[in-house]
Image 1 (cartoon, rainbow, N blue to C red):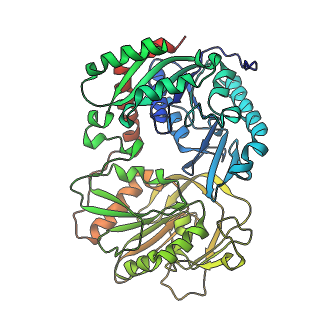
Image 2: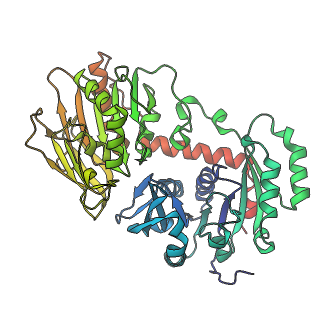
Length: 509
Protein backbone atom coordinates (compact mmCIF):
# COMPACT_ATOMS: atom_id res chain seq x y z
CA UNK A 1 0.00 0.00 0.00
CA UNK A 2 1.42 3.40 -1.01
CA UNK A 3 2.11 5.73 1.94
CA UNK A 4 0.03 8.81 1.03
CA UNK A 5 0.77 11.15 3.94
CA UNK A 6 3.68 13.43 3.04
CA UNK A 7 5.20 16.69 4.27
CA UNK A 8 6.28 19.00 1.46
CA UNK A 9 9.54 20.91 2.04
CA UNK A 10 11.73 23.33 0.11
CA UNK A 11 14.94 21.29 0.13
CA UNK A 12 15.10 17.54 -0.25
CA UNK A 13 15.95 15.88 3.04
CA UNK A 14 18.71 13.29 3.07
CA UNK A 15 18.12 10.12 5.03
CA UNK A 16 20.93 7.74 5.99
CA UNK A 17 19.70 4.16 6.39
CA UNK A 18 21.89 1.21 7.34
CA UNK A 19 21.93 -2.45 6.41
CA UNK A 20 22.25 -3.15 10.14
CA UNK A 21 22.96 -1.55 13.49
CA UNK A 22 26.53 -0.29 13.67
CA UNK A 23 26.90 0.13 9.90
CA UNK A 24 28.10 3.70 10.40
CA UNK A 25 24.93 5.79 10.13
CA UNK A 26 25.74 8.18 12.99
CA UNK A 27 29.21 9.10 11.73
CA UNK A 28 27.94 9.38 8.15
CA UNK A 29 25.25 11.84 9.25
CA UNK A 30 27.80 13.77 11.31
CA UNK A 31 30.13 14.04 8.31
CA UNK A 32 27.37 15.08 5.88
CA UNK A 33 26.15 17.72 8.34
CA UNK A 34 29.59 19.35 8.45
CA UNK A 35 30.13 19.04 4.67
CA UNK A 36 26.83 20.79 3.96
CA UNK A 37 27.52 23.46 6.56
CA UNK A 38 30.83 24.15 4.81
CA UNK A 39 28.93 24.42 1.50
CA UNK A 40 26.80 27.20 2.98
CA UNK A 41 23.66 25.14 3.51
CA UNK A 42 21.54 25.01 6.68
CA UNK A 43 21.67 21.33 7.70
CA UNK A 44 19.70 20.12 10.72
CA UNK A 45 20.05 16.56 12.09
CA UNK A 46 17.02 14.44 12.91
CA UNK A 47 16.36 10.98 14.29
CA UNK A 48 12.72 10.24 14.98
CA UNK A 49 13.36 7.63 17.64
CA UNK A 50 16.56 6.66 19.41
CA UNK A 51 17.23 4.17 22.17
CA UNK A 52 20.11 5.25 24.39
CA UNK A 53 21.08 6.10 27.94
CA UNK A 54 23.77 8.43 26.60
CA UNK A 55 21.74 11.62 26.77
CA UNK A 56 22.15 15.37 26.39
CA UNK A 57 20.03 18.14 27.87
CA UNK A 58 19.17 21.06 25.60
CA UNK A 59 18.84 24.70 26.66
CA UNK A 60 15.15 24.24 27.44
CA UNK A 61 15.89 21.31 29.75
CA UNK A 62 14.80 18.69 27.22
CA UNK A 63 16.48 15.28 27.00
CA UNK A 64 17.77 13.97 23.69
CA UNK A 65 20.30 11.41 22.50
CA UNK A 66 23.92 12.59 22.63
CA UNK A 67 24.48 11.40 19.03
CA UNK A 68 21.98 13.98 17.73
CA UNK A 69 23.58 16.66 19.92
CA UNK A 70 26.95 15.85 18.34
CA UNK A 71 25.39 16.07 14.87
CA UNK A 72 23.95 19.46 15.79
CA UNK A 73 27.45 20.61 16.76
CA UNK A 74 28.58 19.43 13.32
CA UNK A 75 25.89 21.71 11.84
CA UNK A 76 27.11 24.61 13.96
CA UNK A 77 23.77 24.91 15.78
CA UNK A 78 22.46 24.34 19.29
CA UNK A 79 20.99 20.89 19.96
CA UNK A 80 17.23 20.72 20.50
CA UNK A 81 15.08 17.80 21.61
CA UNK A 82 13.00 18.32 18.44
CA UNK A 83 15.95 16.78 16.59
CA UNK A 84 15.28 13.54 18.51
CA UNK A 85 11.59 13.68 19.49
CA UNK A 86 11.43 10.14 20.90
CA UNK A 87 14.14 8.88 23.24
CA UNK A 88 13.79 5.47 24.85
CA UNK A 89 16.06 4.98 27.87
CA UNK A 90 16.47 1.28 28.73
CA UNK A 91 15.95 0.34 32.38
CA UNK A 92 16.55 -3.42 32.12
CA UNK A 93 14.06 -6.29 32.04
CA UNK A 94 12.85 -5.15 28.59
CA UNK A 95 11.53 -1.91 30.11
CA UNK A 96 12.30 1.63 28.97
CA UNK A 97 11.56 5.17 30.04
CA UNK A 98 9.73 7.05 27.28
CA UNK A 99 10.86 10.62 26.51
CA UNK A 100 8.74 12.72 24.13
CA UNK A 101 10.07 16.10 23.04
CA UNK A 102 12.57 16.08 25.88
CA UNK A 103 10.13 15.23 28.69
CA UNK A 104 9.65 11.93 30.49
CA UNK A 105 6.06 10.77 29.98
CA UNK A 106 6.07 7.20 31.24
CA UNK A 107 7.61 3.74 31.05
CA UNK A 108 6.84 0.82 28.80
CA UNK A 109 7.71 -2.80 28.23
CA UNK A 110 8.97 -3.89 24.83
CA UNK A 111 5.87 -6.04 24.38
CA UNK A 112 3.47 -3.15 24.95
CA UNK A 113 5.45 -0.32 23.35
CA UNK A 114 3.90 -0.33 19.89
CA UNK A 115 0.41 -1.05 21.21
CA UNK A 116 0.51 1.89 23.62
CA UNK A 117 2.97 4.33 22.09
CA UNK A 118 2.99 3.93 18.29
CA UNK A 119 0.22 6.45 17.52
CA UNK A 120 1.38 9.16 19.98
CA UNK A 121 4.95 8.50 18.86
CA UNK A 122 4.18 9.15 15.20
CA UNK A 123 2.25 12.28 16.15
CA UNK A 124 5.20 13.69 18.13
CA UNK A 125 7.56 12.96 15.21
CA UNK A 126 5.30 14.84 12.80
CA UNK A 127 4.92 17.70 15.28
CA UNK A 128 8.70 18.02 15.56
CA UNK A 129 9.24 17.96 11.81
CA UNK A 130 6.61 20.63 11.22
CA UNK A 131 8.06 22.80 13.99
CA UNK A 132 11.61 22.51 12.61
CA UNK A 133 10.50 23.49 9.11
CA UNK A 134 8.31 26.32 10.40
CA UNK A 135 11.33 27.94 12.04
CA UNK A 136 13.86 26.95 9.37
CA UNK A 137 12.01 26.86 6.04
CA UNK A 138 15.23 26.72 3.99
CA UNK A 139 16.97 24.03 6.02
CA UNK A 140 17.93 20.58 4.78
CA UNK A 141 17.23 17.77 7.23
CA UNK A 142 19.90 15.09 7.53
CA UNK A 143 18.02 12.14 9.00
CA UNK A 144 19.47 9.09 10.69
CA UNK A 145 17.65 5.79 10.57
CA UNK A 146 17.80 3.13 13.26
CA UNK A 147 19.07 -0.42 12.95
CA UNK A 148 17.87 -2.06 9.75
CA UNK A 149 14.89 -0.59 7.86
CA UNK A 150 13.66 -4.05 6.86
CA UNK A 151 13.07 -5.94 10.08
CA UNK A 152 10.04 -7.78 8.71
CA UNK A 153 8.37 -8.31 12.09
CA UNK A 154 8.66 -4.58 12.88
CA UNK A 155 8.26 -2.75 9.56
CA UNK A 156 4.52 -2.17 9.95
CA UNK A 157 5.17 -0.35 13.22
CA UNK A 158 8.63 1.16 12.55
CA UNK A 159 8.54 4.83 13.54
CA UNK A 160 11.96 6.00 12.47
CA UNK A 161 13.06 4.50 9.14
CA UNK A 162 10.99 4.19 5.97
CA UNK A 163 7.88 5.78 7.49
CA UNK A 164 9.84 9.02 7.99
CA UNK A 165 11.51 8.65 4.57
CA UNK A 166 8.15 8.36 2.80
CA UNK A 167 6.55 11.13 4.83
CA UNK A 168 9.32 13.52 3.72
CA UNK A 169 9.94 11.92 0.30
CA UNK A 170 13.60 11.94 1.33
CA UNK A 171 16.60 11.03 -0.79
CA UNK A 172 17.87 7.94 1.01
CA UNK A 173 21.40 6.57 1.21
CA UNK A 174 22.00 2.96 2.24
CA UNK A 175 25.17 2.44 4.28
CA UNK A 176 26.77 -1.00 4.57
CA UNK A 177 29.77 -2.09 6.62
CA UNK A 178 32.24 -4.16 4.59
CA UNK A 179 34.29 -4.83 7.75
CA UNK A 180 31.51 -7.16 8.94
CA UNK A 181 31.73 -9.30 5.81
CA UNK A 182 28.93 -10.24 3.44
CA UNK A 183 28.55 -6.72 2.08
CA UNK A 184 26.86 -7.87 -1.15
CA UNK A 185 24.26 -9.85 0.76
CA UNK A 186 23.77 -6.93 3.16
CA UNK A 187 22.93 -4.57 0.32
CA UNK A 188 20.94 -6.84 -2.00
CA UNK A 189 19.05 -8.48 0.86
CA UNK A 190 18.05 -5.11 2.36
CA UNK A 191 16.81 -3.78 -1.00
CA UNK A 192 14.95 -6.98 -1.89
CA UNK A 193 12.94 -6.75 1.32
CA UNK A 194 11.73 -3.23 0.50
CA UNK A 195 8.49 -2.43 -1.27
CA UNK A 196 8.83 -0.86 -4.71
CA UNK A 197 7.90 2.65 -3.53
CA UNK A 198 10.46 2.33 -0.72
CA UNK A 199 13.24 1.08 -2.95
CA UNK A 200 12.68 4.05 -5.29
CA UNK A 201 13.73 6.35 -2.45
CA UNK A 202 17.26 4.82 -2.30
CA UNK A 203 19.42 7.17 -4.38
CA UNK A 204 22.85 5.83 -3.48
CA UNK A 205 24.85 3.18 -1.65
CA UNK A 206 27.86 3.73 0.61
CA UNK A 207 30.41 1.00 1.34
CA UNK A 208 31.82 1.85 4.76
CA UNK A 209 35.07 0.87 6.56
CA UNK A 210 36.96 -0.43 3.50
CA UNK A 211 40.55 -1.52 4.22
CA UNK A 212 43.31 -1.47 1.61
CA UNK A 213 43.45 -0.24 -1.99
CA UNK A 214 40.06 1.18 -3.01
CA UNK A 215 40.68 0.13 -6.63
CA UNK A 216 40.41 -3.50 -5.52
CA UNK A 217 36.68 -3.00 -5.09
CA UNK A 218 36.09 -1.70 -8.63
CA UNK A 219 34.57 -4.98 -9.81
CA UNK A 220 32.47 -5.23 -6.66
CA UNK A 221 31.14 -1.70 -7.21
CA UNK A 222 30.25 -2.55 -10.80
CA UNK A 223 28.43 -5.72 -9.71
CA UNK A 224 26.37 -3.90 -7.05
CA UNK A 225 25.34 -1.17 -9.48
CA UNK A 226 24.42 -3.71 -12.15
CA UNK A 227 22.40 -5.83 -9.71
CA UNK A 228 20.59 -3.02 -7.88
CA UNK A 229 20.46 -0.27 -10.55
CA UNK A 230 21.51 2.13 -7.75
CA UNK A 231 24.87 3.98 -7.88
CA UNK A 232 27.59 3.36 -5.31
CA UNK A 233 28.21 6.97 -4.36
CA UNK A 234 31.01 6.39 -1.87
CA UNK A 235 33.55 3.85 -0.68
CA UNK A 236 34.69 5.14 2.68
CA UNK A 237 38.07 3.84 3.92
CA UNK A 238 38.85 2.64 7.41
CA UNK A 239 39.16 6.09 8.93
CA UNK A 240 41.26 5.27 12.00
CA UNK A 241 44.17 4.78 9.61
CA UNK A 242 43.72 8.33 8.30
CA UNK A 243 43.82 10.11 11.67
CA UNK A 244 47.03 10.79 13.59
CA UNK A 245 47.09 9.40 17.16
CA UNK A 246 46.73 12.84 18.72
CA UNK A 247 43.63 13.50 16.58
CA UNK A 248 41.97 10.11 16.77
CA UNK A 249 38.34 9.15 16.39
CA UNK A 250 38.20 8.19 20.07
CA UNK A 251 36.01 11.19 20.78
CA UNK A 252 33.46 9.88 18.30
CA UNK A 253 33.91 6.10 18.46
CA UNK A 254 36.17 5.32 21.44
CA UNK A 255 38.31 2.50 20.07
CA UNK A 256 41.98 2.88 20.97
CA UNK A 257 44.18 3.68 23.96
CA UNK A 258 47.45 5.54 24.38
CA UNK A 259 50.66 3.53 24.55
CA UNK A 260 52.75 5.41 27.14
CA UNK A 261 50.42 6.96 29.69
CA UNK A 262 51.59 8.62 32.89
CA UNK A 263 48.21 8.25 34.61
CA UNK A 264 45.96 5.20 34.62
CA UNK A 265 42.22 5.82 34.99
CA UNK A 266 39.69 3.14 35.92
CA UNK A 267 36.00 3.63 35.08
CA UNK A 268 33.51 1.30 36.76
CA UNK A 269 31.42 -0.44 34.07
CA UNK A 270 28.02 -0.29 35.73
CA UNK A 271 25.30 -2.57 34.30
CA UNK A 272 23.02 0.47 33.81
CA UNK A 273 25.71 3.02 32.92
CA UNK A 274 24.48 6.28 31.41
CA UNK A 275 26.11 9.32 29.81
CA UNK A 276 29.42 7.66 29.02
CA UNK A 277 30.18 10.60 26.70
CA UNK A 278 31.19 12.37 29.94
CA UNK A 279 34.58 10.69 29.47
CA UNK A 280 35.25 11.73 25.86
CA UNK A 281 37.49 14.63 26.97
CA UNK A 282 39.65 12.20 28.96
CA UNK A 283 40.04 9.87 25.97
CA UNK A 284 42.05 12.48 24.15
CA UNK A 285 44.37 13.45 27.01
CA UNK A 286 47.90 12.42 26.06
CA UNK A 287 48.93 11.44 29.59
CA UNK A 288 45.91 9.26 30.41
CA UNK A 289 45.13 5.59 29.85
CA UNK A 290 41.50 4.59 30.41
CA UNK A 291 40.42 1.10 31.38
CA UNK A 292 36.91 -0.15 32.11
CA UNK A 293 36.50 -2.11 35.35
CA UNK A 294 33.91 -4.88 35.07
CA UNK A 295 34.46 -6.96 38.18
CA UNK A 296 35.98 -7.14 41.63
CA UNK A 297 39.74 -6.58 41.71
CA UNK A 298 42.53 -4.80 43.53
CA UNK A 299 42.31 -1.21 42.28
CA UNK A 300 45.72 -0.05 43.51
CA UNK A 301 47.17 0.27 39.99
CA UNK A 302 44.76 3.07 39.10
CA UNK A 303 45.63 6.70 39.78
CA UNK A 304 41.99 7.64 39.95
CA UNK A 305 38.67 5.84 39.77
CA UNK A 306 35.47 7.15 38.21
CA UNK A 307 31.96 6.04 39.13
CA UNK A 308 29.83 7.10 36.14
CA UNK A 309 26.17 7.99 35.86
CA UNK A 310 23.52 5.29 36.15
CA UNK A 311 20.01 4.85 34.79
CA UNK A 312 19.19 2.51 37.71
CA UNK A 313 21.20 3.71 40.70
CA UNK A 314 19.74 1.32 43.31
CA UNK A 315 20.19 -1.62 40.96
CA UNK A 316 23.79 -0.64 40.21
CA UNK A 317 24.63 -0.10 43.88
CA UNK A 318 23.31 -3.60 44.65
CA UNK A 319 25.57 -4.87 41.83
CA UNK A 320 28.58 -3.10 43.38
CA UNK A 321 27.89 -4.68 46.77
CA UNK A 322 27.24 -8.20 45.46
CA UNK A 323 30.23 -8.16 43.12
CA UNK A 324 32.61 -6.95 45.83
CA UNK A 325 33.41 -3.74 43.97
CA UNK A 326 32.01 -1.58 46.78
CA UNK A 327 34.53 -3.09 49.18
CA UNK A 328 37.28 -2.75 46.56
CA UNK A 329 36.45 0.96 46.23
CA UNK A 330 36.47 1.45 50.02
CA UNK A 331 39.86 -0.27 50.31
CA UNK A 332 41.19 1.80 47.42
CA UNK A 333 40.08 4.97 49.22
CA UNK A 334 41.70 3.82 52.48
CA UNK A 335 44.97 3.41 50.57
CA UNK A 336 45.01 7.07 49.50
CA UNK A 337 43.18 6.49 46.26
CA UNK A 338 41.44 9.25 44.28
CA UNK A 339 37.77 8.78 43.40
CA UNK A 340 35.26 10.89 41.53
CA UNK A 341 31.59 10.08 41.01
CA UNK A 342 29.31 11.70 38.45
CA UNK A 343 25.55 11.90 39.05
CA UNK A 344 24.55 8.32 39.98
CA UNK A 345 28.19 7.73 40.87
CA UNK A 346 28.01 10.64 43.32
CA UNK A 347 24.85 9.18 44.85
CA UNK A 348 26.44 5.73 45.29
CA UNK A 349 29.46 7.23 47.07
CA UNK A 350 27.10 8.44 49.81
CA UNK A 351 25.75 6.67 52.87
CA UNK A 352 22.14 5.92 51.94
CA UNK A 353 19.93 5.68 48.86
CA UNK A 354 16.17 5.80 49.33
CA UNK A 355 13.76 4.97 46.50
CA UNK A 356 10.20 5.34 47.85
CA UNK A 357 8.56 5.48 44.42
CA UNK A 358 10.61 2.62 42.87
CA UNK A 359 12.12 4.99 40.29
CA UNK A 360 15.76 3.85 40.40
CA UNK A 361 15.75 0.09 40.09
CA UNK A 362 14.23 -1.06 43.38
CA UNK A 363 12.18 -4.24 42.95
CA UNK A 364 11.20 -5.03 46.53
CA UNK A 365 10.31 -3.24 49.74
CA UNK A 366 13.69 -4.19 51.21
CA UNK A 367 15.45 -2.36 48.39
CA UNK A 368 13.62 0.94 48.92
CA UNK A 369 16.41 2.09 51.25
CA UNK A 370 19.89 0.67 50.97
CA UNK A 371 23.37 1.65 52.03
CA UNK A 372 25.76 3.36 49.65
CA UNK A 373 29.51 2.87 49.47
CA UNK A 374 29.73 5.23 52.44
CA UNK A 375 32.69 7.43 51.51
CA UNK A 376 30.80 10.75 51.41
CA UNK A 377 28.41 11.84 54.20
CA UNK A 378 25.52 12.27 51.77
CA UNK A 379 22.08 10.69 51.56
CA UNK A 380 19.90 10.69 48.45
CA UNK A 381 16.16 10.31 48.08
CA UNK A 382 14.64 9.63 44.66
CA UNK A 383 11.39 11.42 43.88
CA UNK A 384 8.95 11.04 41.01
CA UNK A 385 10.06 14.16 39.12
CA UNK A 386 13.35 14.30 37.24
CA UNK A 387 15.60 17.37 37.15
CA UNK A 388 16.98 18.26 33.70
CA UNK A 389 18.71 21.59 33.08
CA UNK A 390 21.78 23.28 31.71
CA UNK A 391 24.24 24.47 34.38
CA UNK A 392 26.63 27.39 34.64
CA UNK A 393 28.47 27.79 37.93
CA UNK A 394 31.89 28.51 39.40
CA UNK A 395 34.11 25.87 40.90
CA UNK A 396 35.93 26.30 44.22
CA UNK A 397 37.97 23.08 43.94
CA UNK A 398 40.44 22.04 42.67
CA UNK A 399 40.56 25.59 41.30
CA UNK A 400 38.37 28.61 40.77
CA UNK A 401 36.97 28.58 37.26
CA UNK A 402 33.74 28.88 35.34
CA UNK A 403 32.07 25.53 34.77
CA UNK A 404 29.31 24.57 32.33
CA UNK A 405 27.42 21.32 31.91
CA UNK A 406 24.00 19.85 32.55
CA UNK A 407 22.03 17.98 35.18
CA UNK A 408 19.85 14.97 34.46
CA UNK A 409 18.91 13.01 37.56
CA UNK A 410 16.06 11.74 39.67
CA UNK A 411 17.31 12.34 43.19
CA UNK A 412 17.83 14.96 45.86
CA UNK A 413 21.06 14.74 47.86
CA UNK A 414 21.69 16.31 51.24
CA UNK A 415 24.31 16.09 53.97
CA UNK A 416 24.10 13.13 56.35
CA UNK A 417 25.21 14.54 59.69
CA UNK A 418 24.82 11.20 61.47
CA UNK A 419 28.03 9.84 59.97
CA UNK A 420 31.52 10.02 61.45
CA UNK A 421 33.28 10.89 58.22
CA UNK A 422 35.86 13.58 57.37
CA UNK A 423 34.70 17.13 56.70
CA UNK A 424 33.00 17.55 53.34
CA UNK A 425 33.20 20.72 51.24
CA UNK A 426 31.26 22.03 48.24
CA UNK A 427 33.02 21.85 44.88
CA UNK A 428 31.00 24.73 43.42
CA UNK A 429 29.50 28.01 44.55
CA UNK A 430 26.15 26.35 43.94
CA UNK A 431 26.65 24.03 46.91
CA UNK A 432 24.17 21.39 45.71
CA UNK A 433 26.13 20.55 42.56
CA UNK A 434 28.95 18.57 44.16
CA UNK A 435 31.13 17.85 47.20
CA UNK A 436 34.66 16.68 47.97
CA UNK A 437 36.86 15.40 50.78
CA UNK A 438 40.64 15.74 50.88
CA UNK A 439 41.89 13.03 53.23
CA UNK A 440 44.67 13.93 55.67
CA UNK A 441 46.79 10.91 54.78
CA UNK A 442 46.30 11.49 51.06
CA UNK A 443 43.69 10.84 48.44
CA UNK A 444 40.49 12.62 47.46
CA UNK A 445 36.84 11.65 47.17
CA UNK A 446 34.65 13.86 45.01
CA UNK A 447 31.24 13.73 43.41
CA UNK A 448 29.24 16.04 41.18
CA UNK A 449 25.85 16.19 39.52
CA UNK A 450 27.32 18.02 36.50
CA UNK A 451 27.47 15.95 33.34
CA UNK A 452 30.14 17.26 31.00
CA UNK A 453 32.36 18.36 33.89
CA UNK A 454 35.50 17.17 32.06
CA UNK A 455 34.61 19.30 29.02
CA UNK A 456 35.65 22.32 31.12
CA UNK A 457 39.30 22.63 30.16
CA UNK A 458 40.63 24.58 33.17
CA UNK A 459 38.78 22.35 35.65
CA UNK A 460 39.92 19.17 33.89
CA UNK A 461 43.54 20.36 33.72
CA UNK A 462 43.60 21.19 37.42
CA UNK A 463 42.01 17.90 38.45
CA UNK A 464 44.58 15.99 36.40
CA UNK A 465 47.36 18.11 37.94
CA UNK A 466 45.99 17.21 41.38
CA UNK A 467 46.48 13.55 40.47
CA UNK A 468 49.92 14.23 38.97
CA UNK A 469 51.00 15.96 42.16
CA UNK A 470 49.92 12.94 44.23
CA UNK A 471 52.21 10.81 42.02
CA UNK A 472 55.11 13.28 42.23
CA UNK A 473 54.79 13.94 38.51
CA UNK A 474 55.61 17.43 37.19
CA UNK A 475 52.65 19.76 36.98
CA UNK A 476 51.52 20.40 33.42
CA UNK A 477 51.64 24.17 33.07
CA UNK A 478 50.92 24.05 29.36
CA UNK A 479 47.23 24.54 28.73
CA UNK A 480 45.76 21.49 27.06
CA UNK A 481 43.97 21.89 23.75
CA UNK A 482 40.37 22.88 24.34
CA UNK A 483 38.13 19.82 24.25
CA UNK A 484 35.53 21.64 22.17
CA UNK A 485 38.19 22.84 19.74
CA UNK A 486 39.48 19.27 19.52
CA UNK A 487 35.96 17.98 18.87
CA UNK A 488 35.54 20.58 16.11
CA UNK A 489 38.87 19.58 14.58
CA UNK A 490 37.93 15.91 14.54
CA UNK A 491 34.53 16.62 12.97
CA UNK A 492 36.30 18.74 10.32
CA UNK A 493 38.75 15.92 9.60
CA UNK A 494 35.91 13.40 9.47
CA UNK A 495 34.06 15.57 6.97
CA UNK A 496 37.17 16.02 4.83
CA UNK A 497 37.75 12.25 4.68
CA UNK A 498 34.13 11.61 3.70
CA UNK A 499 34.19 14.43 1.17
CA UNK A 500 37.18 12.82 -0.59
CA UNK A 501 35.29 9.59 -1.18
CA UNK A 502 31.61 10.61 -1.30
CA UNK A 503 29.79 12.12 -4.27
CA UNK A 504 27.57 14.35 -2.15
CA UNK A 505 26.14 16.47 -5.01
CA UNK A 506 24.56 13.35 -6.50
CA UNK A 507 21.82 13.21 -3.88
CA UNK A 508 21.10 16.86 -3.04
CA UNK A 509 18.35 17.44 -5.64
